[in-house]
Structure formats: C-alpha cells, structure tokens
Image (cartoon, rainbow, N blue to C red; front, side, top):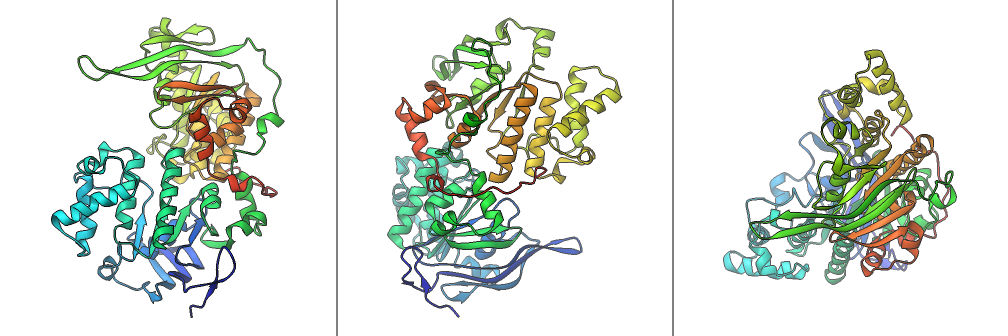
Length: 562
C-alpha cells in the first residue's frame, strides 16, 4: 500500500509517489543461466522530487531505469516485484501498452545524444513526431509547437536549428533536443540516464540547470541515474546507492553525505575528486626537479586548417608552455578548444603551421624518416576510451607486445619478459595476458593501455582524457597508479582533460585553452586559487560536487585490479 512519505527537504508529509518500485528483481538470460542484475530493490520518487540512483558500472542502475520504462534488452526480464506509476503496476504490461505511456506519462533522457536521434530526420520533425504519435498535434501545428519546445529548452535560433540534422548540432544542442522531446507532453516522471556524462562541464551545468527549471515549473518527478556523485550531491533531494544490484543505503542526500552508513558509500565519496579539497600533489611532492630541465617545450604553436580557396580556421593560436622532467602538465579545455590538435602536433603526427615543439632537446621540425620513427619511442599516448583503444581480436599479450615488434628486434624470451614486467608494473596479474579485452573491466583495460605505452620505456606519456570514461573509484585507482609510476620511473605526463577537479589532483602546472588560445597558465594552485580569465572562473564554477567539500569520510581499501 502506498502511504504518505516525509518530504525530502523539510520532513513534512508529501503526496503519494509518482514512481514506487517494490521488490524489483531483474535477470538476464545467459545461455542456460539467468544472471541477476538487480536484486529486490525498493525506492520511490515523489512529484517535484529528484532522486539520484548512484553506482558504478554493473551496479544495476541502468537496468533499473530500463525496466521502469519497459526498455530492457531482449534477454532481460523482470523476475519479480512491482513498478507502480501513479499508483498503477506497469511491470507486466506488454510493449504496445507501454508505448501509450512513454512520452506522455514517463519519458527518458538517454546518455548519448550522438546515438539517440535519427540521423536522417531534421530536428524539427523529430520533436514534432512525439506530439503526432500521441495525437496531441499534427502537421504544421505540431511543427510550430516543436519550435516552441526548442526555444523553451534554450536552443539558440530554434527555427534555424529545427531545419538541421543531428550531425549539424553540438553535443549540448543535441541533448537539449532530447530534453525537448522528453518534456513535450509534460510527463509525470522523467528518467535522466547519465544525461550529461558526454558533455563538457559548462554545458553539463546548463543542461542540469534546465532539467531543474523544468522540474520546478511542471512539478515533474526526476529519477537521475548517474555514476557522478558530484552531480548527485548537487542536484538530488534523495540518494540511492547501488552496488552489484543491491541497495547499500538510501535517504536524504544531505544526510548520506554527512554520515554515510555503508563502507561502499564511504569509498565512493572518498574517491570523488573535489575541486576544493587540498591536492595530493601539494602534500606528497617528489624529489625536486631542476627548474631548467624542461623535457617538453612548446613555443608559439599555430595550426590553421583550410576551409576552401581563401578561408581558413585557426584551431591552435600561439600556444606556448614548458614541462619540467618528471612533472605533470595539464592542458584543460572544452570541445573545440584545440586540445586534440595540440596533442597531434606534440606527438609528431601533424606539422604545425608555425611555431615549434622541442622534446628532450630535439626540434620535431628537423626529424625525418627513421629518426622520426624512433622518436615516437620517447613519447607514447594513452587514449580516453579503454573499450575502443584495444584490438578486440588480440590477446592482452599481443597488444602489449606489439610496440616491441614495431620498434625493438628483441629475442622472443626478452619480449615476453618485457611484456610481463609491464603488466605487473600496472598492477595486473599475469594470467590476464592470455585473455582478450572483452574479458576485462574498464579499469583493467586502461591499465593494459598504460602497460602498452610503458613497454617501450618512453620519457613522456600523453594522457588524452585517460580517466574520463571511468567510474569514480576506478578513476581514483588509475590516478594513484599514474602517480606511482611517475615516482618510480621518472615519467613526464602531458595530461589532457576537461575535468578541472581531476587536474587539480594530479597536475603540477596547467594551461587553460579557450578557442585555441591559452587564457590561463602556471602552477595548479595559483591558477585555481587566482584565475586570471573569466573563462577559467566559469569552468571552476561549473564543476559539480561543491556539496562534497565538507564531508568527513574515511577511505576503505580499493580493489586495485578493478
């Protein structure tokens, strides 16, 4: 029976929940076995309330959200429990009946705006379609209402955008389109499944602000599914912490942040990189490095790209910085800031229009042929996506061995020893060598990517958003690993990221890029405590997790092999 529940903010009685999940168990058919992904969970969401469902990959949070809206994978099913929407149990409804309430009573804002819109339909037609499907409007009336919705979600020049195709919009614009579709029929419940995880930090803030405005205006209940405790802390009334399909604890967000009951929640909180916490670097600085020992020097770098016979676009505009040997220099910026172009130039994959890059005394502009090829041993890249950067057809041994085959004609036994040493160095057991990437977790795959980069004994690692695709606990483990490797091997890191909280945790110095130009640079603490540009201040203000600053939690032991 549904009963009045206390208000998440002031403790007073609140109305019957819009969503009431009771005893929900979800399983997936895997051959002859059924794998339980969600195990007897109970929670509810009231009108005008934001409840955050938090957990790492594999915790069951996405399965729970998919079950609520009836979009489980073909091999997934609800084994037991009820899902009541406005008091009605919908857990056993067929798809045709669920179609009638998707969009009108419950809507989904999916994670990936790039793959969630029809690439061959204009934006205006896709928004109008939801109105037509549910019989609210058709033809020119529906299209006119679609433009009003696009304007409502803050899309600039909505009439113009309505005529565009998804590929012509930025990630933030596409996410606003998905929100317009989700709110078109003013549903009672919106499920926001990692709605900002693929977005830059300032765009993330704008999208979350928009969802909150709409919740306030329409009284919509919001189930926020996220692995980002910073976002959950700032945006939710109540928090539900999931681990391996079970609820570890739930309650008012402020109460859980102040006094987490479960060891798992304490671990999650301790692993969140907070913008305002003292940096680990400041407390644990390694042996000092001579101020003149710059292993990487970037001077007045410019990169223009032609846009036709006479037009050009300047992606990198007079960038300069220096990196001392054995330290970490971070390059921070949002999409379009010039980070990727700069990485390609520094790694000698692209020649700049002007300016120069000097690595360990070598001017890259002077390198040719075999000298250039051998130079690549000095500087190795670790990419963002551990799921996409490893060949799925190769064993882990072959993946780590490949750079040696390309650069060093070593005997087979010596190659095997070097591979094993690299794998052990990144904290993985040797039995992973015969496995393939699909058999490893995201954190394990990223450790393999780091091992592959280390096997040639480089001097510099370029880490291109190397932890942004990882859950917070795994991210903390990889950052700790990088710190350990730097201490032991004297590595220099060029750490490229859009996440200022992570940058403050790992970097010694930083350059902030905006539209191809450096707008702030210097020691990390100086830039964070005294930013010179309005853009840097905006980036800092947009970082989620400010409510985590005053928490007092004790870390627990992490699983290093995760």
